[in-house]
Image 1 (cartoon, rainbow, N blue to C red):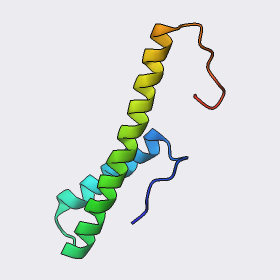
Image 2 (cartoon, rainbow, N blue to C red; image 1 turned 120 degrees about the horizontal axis):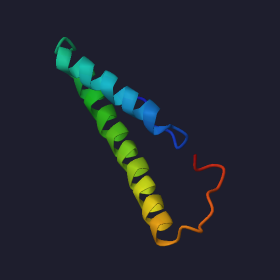
Image 3 (cartoon, rainbow, N blue to C red; image 1 turned 135 degrees about the vertical axis):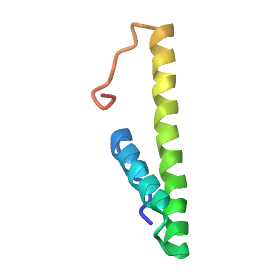
Length: 75
C-alpha cells in the first residue's frame, strides 16, 4: 500500500483512486490484494477530501476578504 504524501496533488490522487476502483471492479484480485487496495483507496479518498476542504476554506477566505494575497505555493 502506498500512503499519499503531503506533496501529492489532487489530480494525482484522483487518478490513483480511479485506478484502484477499476481494479476492484474488475473482481479478479485475490482477497488479500483486494483488501489492500481497498485500504489504500480509503487513505487516498481521505487525502482528496482534505485537499478539497482546504480549497473550500481558501475560497471562503477570498470571498470574505478579497484583498488576501495568494502565496506562490497555493497554485
